Length: 251
Length: 250
Image 1 (cartoon, rainbow over the protein chains, first blue to last red):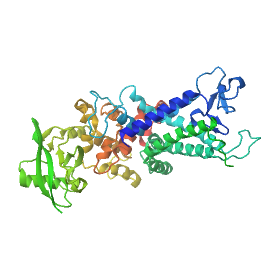
Image 2: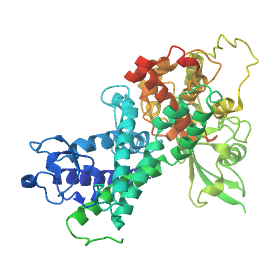
Image 3: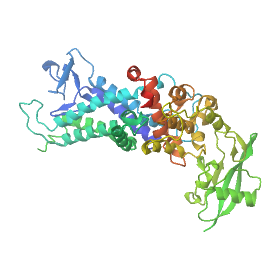
Image 4: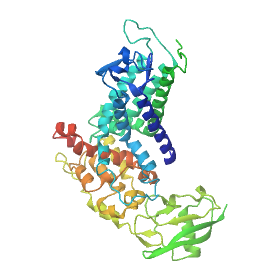
């Protein structure tokens, strides 16, 4: 992937994600919820009748924050996936090359007078990658729940008819890609088995390590695929919530 | 089918130099090192270059071919357009002695700094009994032929001479990784490699992996696992508190 393409894709994603996070609307259409707004932490997300947000009517929310919460709930959520990707070993390579030109390409001179790498603040913070990985797993579980819920007419158990639409599969593929990206992470590889000295004494962990190693070889591809698809998932839900896509329901 | 190949070879010494044009006849199936030998034999007997095995196993003929660090003996002429000249320059990260020969002494200093293998108390002497899965891990790093192309391409020292005293470079990070992953090694080098050998300088742009003629996954299997091991002992508060005293031998 050339630095110019990395630059273009990453910049477009950041621009789109910023827009989508600040819109604070059009993120829910029964039964699909945008991954940027899940889980909804504030009651303003949908419950309160006189504070209803367009395109978010009826969205299930956790209600951690009351109706006083005015900022878009996506801002709270996006910190974690953003942190996970910012500190990811693959993205680091991509943006050091594409944005910081350090170096722009192998054996090409970099334009900086001094270089201290990841030894000082703020870049020393890259070392907390594994914590973002743990948080990422929580979000993956939530988005998997959302994907399953996209195959159900209503989330209330009393009224649980089936539902299959294009959006159900969009949410499902999105969750699968995010799992694959998280599990192929270098920190995950270290945690499941890489930190051991004796593979032979831990055969099960060695097996997991072998599995993650295979996935890890595709970390770059999974990073791009999951990044682009999560944005497309939001686009789909946004357009559906705004009523541009019709019903989109198959069964 | 033979043809006349145009070469631009850097000629000079520590006081300076320039690219000199040569045209030499080459044959099908030849490599860049063959062309350099033709120059020595037919055009300029005083051209200096290091070489030994001509099979990509001795790591002597490292140079930069069209700006890319490569082994001259493993670079086929058929990869290039016959009409275009091929430029050969010495490795840029090391001081030139003469023509294509550089002083790679920096690497020997860094090699001498690596604390040697220190056996555990349970198995203090060879022969060490090891399972094959544990051996394989370090065997990958043992493939290194010490051509120092990774050291040459690494921008940390290539573009910043001032970093050399504090940076061991990719070739030696895989040596530290190999020892840290060795089941019979008792010495903990994690803090050393981070605090004094410059592991944190690496920003994992993977150029070392790209140029390795032995295809060692230097970054993915050596440097990143080593960075994660450093996090275990230096930057992970939870692991810091719950770490078992015997974690080193697990």
